[in-house]
Length: 349
Image (cartoon, rainbow, N blue to C red; front, side, top):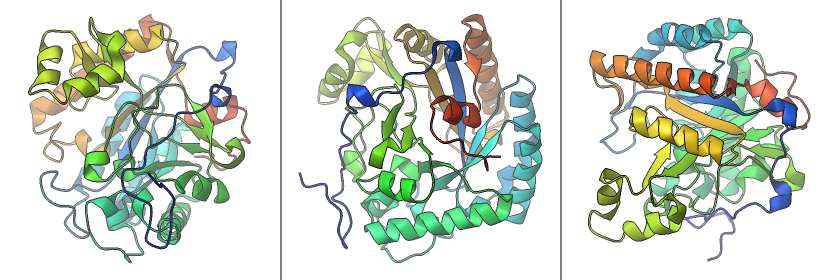
């Protein structure tokens, strides 16, 4: 399939090629095994409705300081990947500026193309993956968001995530040209091609260099296969997807599950097993994530009520205890960038 870009955009279903072994990042021995957390800091919307430009809210930002305190009390920095509605809202800017006073958390960029100007594209499912847009339009949206974040927080962001994990063949080059040094748009072992999005089926959990001249650190969201048949990996998982209820049967019988490191839709027991597998497989940076609207009840399918919020925080408490027991320490965005031996991002906050 031709994956090139043009004035009409990339061919939907971009299949991201695996990195050559030489491009895998060799973390120094003294760095140890670490973990980091990226927060998709975004507007609230109806997860069951079509995406809209104006049908969203921001009321959950009032809950961010208390949620942040829970992580800060454990010595865990967060990287807030901010999208356009957040970066242009005065209350959100004030709330996030206050939590950055911990000195180790950071602001990055998250591009939700459907709420990020310029709006020169049709509002379609395929176009919600920014990497499918014409290169000039993807670039213009990145520029608008970067400028908004810089104005809001007084520092140029150096880390990027595409909303819906929607990178395309031009994305890394556009980021490198704009001074970004880290991307975390890849969700290891996931495929969004049925929706017109990218296919990450060939990508593992190890960080690697990407883009022109290896200028970008790619830090995939950690996803592992657990269960007695986990050696079958993505090949077996994909085959099960072609069988009626195949994946569900294998998951319920503890034969094979695909587990991402997030409290959203990933049961605690499965996540604890996934951490054990990732550490055992030599993943040196475990990359966790969650959506900012989950810090208040009623804004995501994952935290519907007060009980759901208690479960969300309990998930993290148990995960942190397990990571500490294993000697896996937290890492800030700055530490990751500096340790990867790329030019340090002096403007990180």
